[in-house]
Amino acid sequence: MILFSIAFTVYKYTQYTFHLPYIGHSIKISLIFEAIAEPHKKDDRTIINLSKILSVESMPHSTLAENVAAALRESIYNGGHFIGERLIELTLAHEMNVSQNTVRDALRILEQEGLVVKHARKGVYVRTYTAVEAEELYALWAVLEKLALNWTITALTEDSLQELRDLVDEARSQTEARNPLGAIESLLTFHETVGRVAGKPQTAALLTSVLNQVRLLENGIRQVRAPRTIQQRRAQIADYELLLNAIERRDLESAHSILLKTITADCNALLDTL
Image (tube, rainbow, N blue to C red; front, side, top):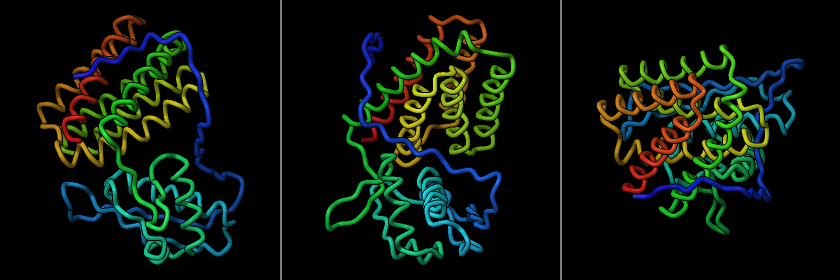
């Protein structure tokens, strides 16, 4: 068992790289990705088909690479690529109807985000985690979100509070629909929303980066090796309702305590699978 100590007074940030998705509202974008959830399953994970790409000729190379990275990122999060799986440039280029150079640039983006690792003379792989690395990651999550909560409590509006309520409700609906990946996504989006509502862009960016790696661990390892039972998921949703109630009451001490309990429980369950 582990317990995180999160009463830090000094923070030092060095060499963090974040990917901000490209969104083009004012230019014509002719690239269309269709991530199709196939009806068959493999190890309880939905297989993602990334093969449908249309009209890519007129798109700038950098934008195309960013969109390929986005499609691969989504596939990794949803179990389309295994933890530790080798990502072969030529295969991906054929599947996605793009050049190897584009795939190579996309993989560099994912490498900067910490989702893949490149081994000399061996290729690029979806990254794996040791127990020590996973424990550190969840400790960082606890520290960053505790800090964000301090600001979120004061910045909270009725609209942002409703957004948090809706995410807990969505997680409950996905749980009852037996869609664990959907439930996980709703709960992680809850945490990202806490970071965003705080109104501190650097903290929100750091928290999002950590949560993206948590997605990889929760979907790629925990859900595969030791998925929660429906009873465990219902208990998890109950804890989030308590957290939401504490936030709504602006009870910072209770919110901190429930948050720490929730993250610690998730971390301990994950460590048992590593």
